[in-house]
Image (cartoon, rainbow, N blue to C red; front, side, top):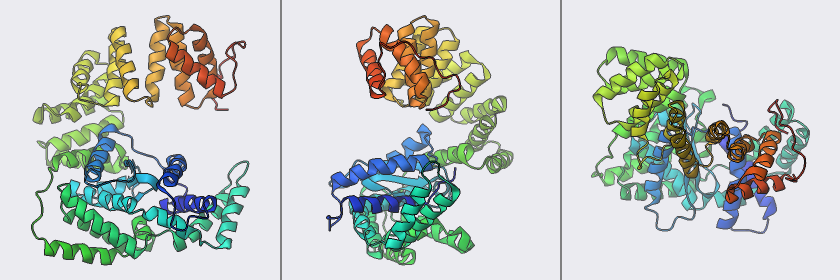
Amino acid sequence: MNCIAKPATILFAFFFLWSCIFPGNAAGITIEEEEELSKEFLKIALMHYDLIEDPAIADYVNRVGRKIVAELPSPPFNYHFYVIRQDVYNAFAGPAGHIFINSGLLEGMESENELAGILAHEISHVACRHISEMVERSKKTTLLTLAGIATGIFLGVGGATTAASAVTVSSIAAGASISLAYSRENEMEADQIALKYLLKAGYTEEGLLKTLKKIRTRNWYGSDQIPTYLTTHPATEDRIAYISSCIEEKPVSPSQPETSKFIIIQTRLTALYGEERIARKKFEIAVKNNPDQYLSHYGYGLVLARVGDNIGSAKHLRKALEDKPLDQTVIRELGRVYFLNGNYKEAYIMLKDAASPSSNDSEVRFYLGRTLKELGKTKQAILEFEQLLSENPDFTQAYYHLGVIYGEQEMLGEAHYYLGMYYWKKRQARNAVFHLKRAAKHLTAMKKKQKAEKILKAVGVDVDLKDSQPDRSGLIY
């Protein structure tokens, strides 16, 4: 999914508008104001970026990031880490500790040290309040840039046109080139802080150095392929020289973190979210050249499941499991594939194992719930779905399946409530209102009844009115 604007242009638009709201803050915005800004930034960023929400990948990147944050003496924000599905070399920090890394850059790395290095640099930008300084600098944009942004916005009223988007983005980009990029001083300070806390977290300085060299190498391919990272993080050559000198002064580095988890996550990223044709060819060759290698079969099994060959997928995942019989990553995938093949008994064995008390994997619980339903274990299925939603209330599909189960049990209040919540989260307001009105009338569970009534009140619906009809088209209104 291509974003409408690069990270720099989106950030600049927010920073400029925020500086208009808080024109008197000569030293930049406060922590509270930056947190408020981050809410609006996330709304737009999540509209324009295709995030990889795969629990295994997202949790791993967050674990690495939080390991570094744990070494900061007093972090100003609660940090969150995201992976963007985009095959370019980039990473950037948004307001209030929201840090993004592109899948292309993650695929290009070789170890957890490299991932830790780039995350530590972005963490340091946030900790040093460099984004707050950008807001101050963004006030100095020209009137021409402001006029371009305003024109683009107003041309887009009533339906954003290509021309309007072009005017807005190009104007924002012009201002961003003047105001947004970190200063050389910002970059050097972020590197100094990053190196300090990388070592404390048990990583090496070489990770950041290797990543910067990879990004610089991409620049040699031609001007139309310059990594986005280089446009917003200047002084790359100076940074490489500085980090190299630090390593020379401290030749003894801490022991490297165990890398097998990184390789597994990277294999998963490539197989499930890389370009499909390239990924399939890569793992076909890997299986042919390394028929006894665990990762070759794991990656190929994931690719085959992705293209709908569940029988072939199960074959290669079983082969991977022979090599690592206790590998929860393979077990969860094999359980999902068994379910999709209709092998519910085998699916139950695998998914039950993967859904251990220590596991917090929403997708495993989702497929376990569906498997239990197919096996006729309705009460257990309900418990599994409800446990899933208590841990992850944003897992939208679980609401639908739970609503269907309750409907089959003729528990109408519960059925309408979960179907209503499903449509509400899908932004299909007419269908949501239809089900929530009926839920409010039939529910005996007070918390659910009050939640349904609260949503209905928020959209101005009287629960005592005559039942409306659901919108069969599923259109949002």
